[in-house]
Length: 211
Image (cartoon, rainbow, N blue to C red; front, top):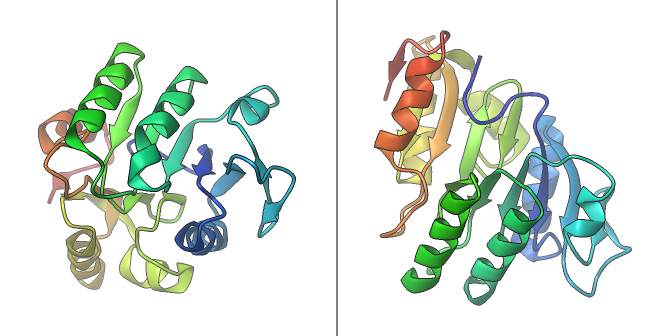
């Protein structure tokens, strides 16, 4: 079991042609994640490590179901990117970008709540269910990710992406492993807090404790 994502979770990357997003795409694919498309307006028709790039999310969702989106666009465009994802029925959004204006974060979080979409971040590294999938830059390259994270029964949450990995690495070294680890984001205003994620871990029969 796990929370939020598993081996069947499909997601897209908004801003996929950016330098950091290109690296993230490769790392997610190498780990086995199901990245089914990317969006960069004006660059449709290209691909990033075999992942097709589109101008709009609708071009992807018209053809297939998409569970989530990782938003890596510059801060001035985060709100519009989130609105586009929500409007196209995506129910899980991971916002990697930091320093998004608080007023715009408040707007996108309210719109997400109105439409039943869960937001992780902004300013986070994402989510990982070890051995199944990772969504975002959490853990870094696949080899490093496999070293730090291992399947287990401990849920991990931290506002710090680095501490998420550090804590998980210590658990792995102790032979415990993780059910799901979530970097919830370091910005003053974030989508999902510790208190909001705890019930998901509590409902997971294969999570015994939370760090």
